[in-house]
Image (cartoon, rainbow, N blue to C red; front, side, top):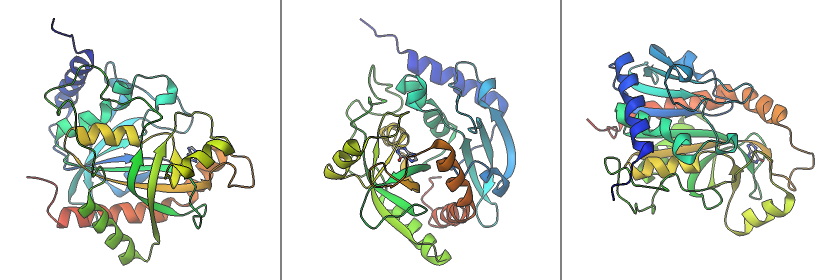
Length: 287
Ligand code: HPA
């Protein structure tokens, strides 16, 4: 029996719509997490597509999260073709995982070979402080369903994709160099994705530490799995907006997370721009 692949059908329909709106071919895809929401001002914008305009597309319900694709040129001289997701949807909003990663898949289909993921997260590791930036070295996605559940979308990747280097080593090196050149301290560690929307309990954070996580958040890992499935080269940076529950002395609030992320925005934006330039100059964005 042929299994009807609804996720694939929706993906191709969304892709056709996006292509009807722009012929722009991005090379680097960026997911703008908390604190990078207004990164668009660093981009020479060529086209914008609001998520609402794309039929069947998941739309974020979170206050302060905008939703649109921005196509244009970024980097030091605004010459690197990029596509940005200004706003992402999260699993805790009630979407299927295949919907949560639909935008990532679309950006690959539009042409992006490299994916730069950003997020806000809670710091777990000793020595981490609120306000730190952490380069993601690896991840734990075992607490959320895989976005690859269900019929495999053959045109995208294989049924059983390898995940031995989700975050590309060369990209990580380039990001470290970009941070060094700006005098920005970049910590490194493993990111764990929890379901949310509740923050973790102290016991859950203690568990996360034991299983090897250095920072905890509610996004990103599922996106990285979907992107790795498609053979994208991936880099990720977490802004540690707070220390995770039980490590932090005070209760967590979304407002505070947002405010801290906004306050760190200039540093985060500089690092993203320098990283984009380095990645482009290294010639690893494909032809
Ligand atoms: N936990 C989960 N997600 C988060 C956190 C946290 O402590 N901070 C920002 N996003």
